[in-house]
Image 1 (cartoon, helix red, strand yellow):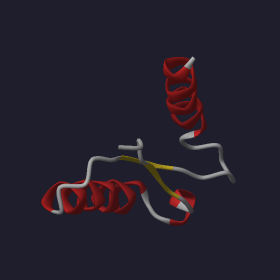
Image 2 (cartoon, rainbow, N blue to C red; image 1 turned 180 degrees about the horizontal axis):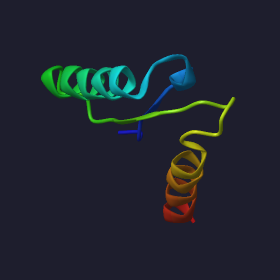
Image 3 (cartoon, helix red, strand yellow; image 1 turned 135 degrees about the vertical axis):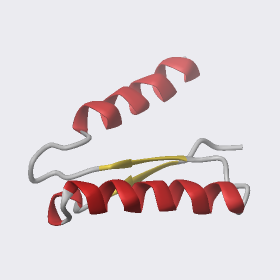
Image 4 (tube, helix red, strand yellow; image 1 turned 45 degrees about the horizontal axis):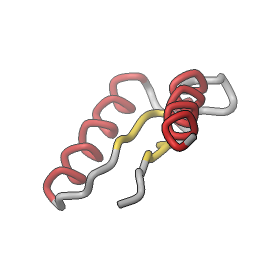
Length: 65
């Protein structure tokens, strides 16, 4: 299986509480449908989630070498 990491973009458009609620709902839905994936909030506008995204990509590519 291929790894799947979902970026919930436009996170800067929501208040923090609403963004966290959305993230939790996505994780719950993934689990209910037995989808092996991770998810995170992301915003290119304010750089939210950039470090986590780069870290995830580095982990995948370093594992593949």
